[in-house]
Length: 187
Image 1 (tube, rainbow, N blue to C red):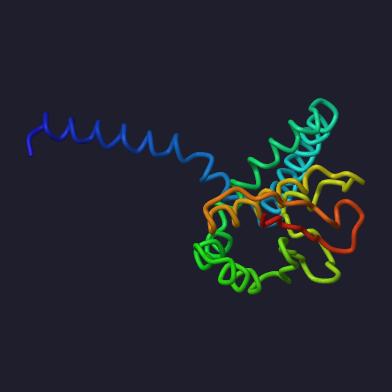
Image 2 (cartoon, rainbow, N blue to C red):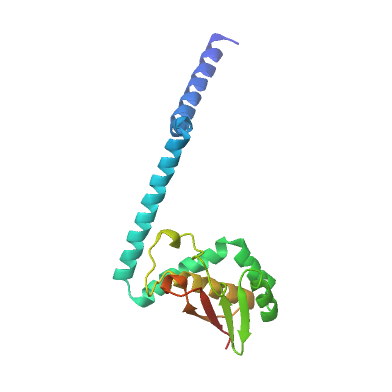
């Protein structure tokens, strides 16, 4: 190797290692933290996100009309359906057949048909709200967060049976009920 080639390679190596160092500095310092420091940082970030989410939801609650709140939370519920494979699987197992859809639902929920309606319930009594977002958000008597779950069930039925459905919230833990219970109108 001649001197010019050696210098060129050395400069390239120096630049590359400097870039790697600069880009990875935060990762290197994170790795040097103690487990307690990492835990404290994660706790601080969780608290920050919980407070930020509470501020956002309070602002939505006080600034938007009921229709706007329902529409906003419905978008979240539809996204939740798309993100969680077990929900997509329920719709896929029931594709084009209400009886198969109800059987697929029974793997995770209490479900029964009553004439032109279907009940979806999270047990006779639930010990907690199952939404991780809601765990750190205080419940309210007419909690609009429940519209997210309502829309998720709406999305499952619509994906499976390829038509629109009306879904009602009959009861929810966040609204003071003993469980979450939804009513899907078939007609």
